[in-house]
Length: 162
Ligand SMILES: [Zn+2]
Image 1 (cartoon, protein in one colour):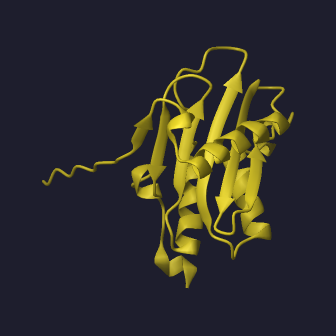
Image 2 (tube, helix red, strand yellow; image 1 turned 135 degrees about the vertical axis):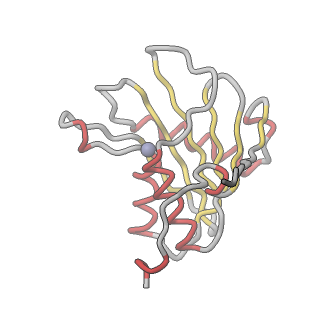
Image 3 (spheres, rainbow, N blue to C red; image 1 turned 180 degrees about the vertical axis):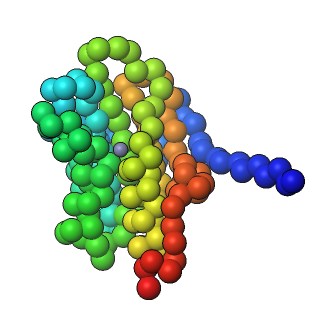
């Protein structure tokens, strides 16, 4: 028997104001994106903003549906929009934020497993890691570089892509 240990790494900041200017601005875009959230069921609004290499910003927000599984998370709304419209302009960073009136958010909201799996595929496709910036109205900011620091056991099978 062999015991394995996997370490992940991320940075923590006190506030988005400590980030560099482009990342700080991307956070403001994610907050703006959150305004188009359609979340009458969960009342949990999520906004995502992607910054592409060209400087272009792509927006995503969670889009729910009365037939619950038909909805989609903010991250995948943004990432699929990128894939459909700007696949040759690599994603440098994604800022994600959330808001609800139902309870207090005191730490960043992390992505669900499905969004992480999609993020993994975008990184593979563009052959470059993505910087993910997570923050809420209160609490710290987490900056995570590369999917291996979020989903070390991601599903990927090279033989399915050839
Ligand atoms: Zn998700």
